[in-house]
Length: 482
Image (cartoon, rainbow, N blue to C red; front, side):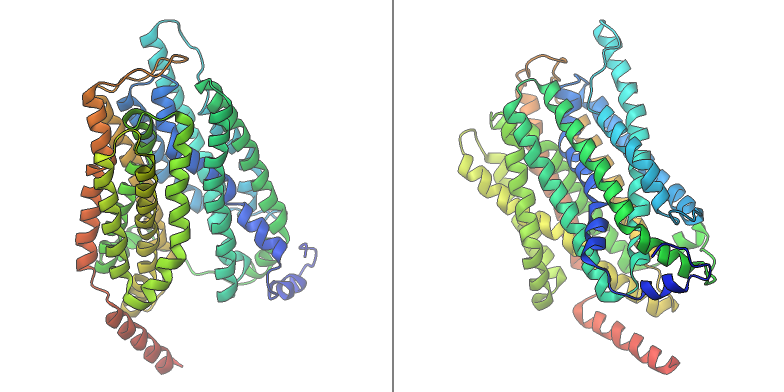
């Protein structure tokens, strides 16, 4: 299927075929590297900064905030550039993955080392701060360079509705699998190596290699298919892109969408605060070893994955809002239980982790499942389908939620008197004020965000009946136009 035909006929013909297993696996592999990087970073980077590099929690949160804000800013820049990329050998998207894979792996790894800049503690701390800011910003650039073009490949690999569903199932298999794999790998490394700096050094090195290789698997495994699409695409004139100002106007005049992004932002803040504080909670409040942290996180993530299918089927019977309320109320009860959890209560700890995973599952599933309803309402009002604009804002919010959540936790810890560990030294004993702050961050803070999500979900205007009416009107309009 290489683009050797000058008129592109062979490519267009082959493009109409179904995707084979080899192509689907290769496409799924493209999300493995970013999933591993995001998983390890979300769970452990704040802990690494405070407990290994010896950076105060507030400054550590600021490093992550700067990196994630820049990540959100560079998304539209890279998006525009990939749309304009022209390569006879690779098409529009694949050059970004091909040339970005190795720098992505290198800069991900460089986030997890502790360079020695000075023997004077304050000078060393500020040198490390600026080192991690610079490396973090560059790392986020290369994350976007490989991940954003990758996500744009889905409609380019197939235009078949069912094939897209199948393709995305392979993507999420690798994505979720990568997150769990990174936690299992972390548990193995933490259990076999005692030195904390070496733990993260080895974990990061293994993850960087796997992430880089998986991206090249994606590039070479999807290349023929992408080139076939390019041959077809370049023979058809594309409509002009909407100006940014017009995109903002479309998004923020859609009232149901504002509810959805509010629900999603509150839910995602709860997810990120919980994910970032659990390592501190397990070690400091429950007095368990650091090697046991991934086990708790796997219990949460594993339950969340298993419950996706359950909640999805249940929502078809009782509705999305009801499922969201059920899951979030379970999570609130688990969060309250965490506040009272004491050392030695391992059985109760894992029970609460499982219940939390049930709630986390609805936080992932329901806001995203509300999005098609919003898009169909927009289509009814405007006559156009603009999935890209709405999904783009959802991704933007996800990144801001992650950044703000980590910043909030870091500064809350610093304000409470949390004692960071000096590089290479044992973990210090935390004062009661810091332990209290960790308990609040693990329980009360997520509860506040979750209640905010419940309030917005209650007032979300698109019910099952209204959605059926929207679909009916769309069908009548299409029949009338036909």
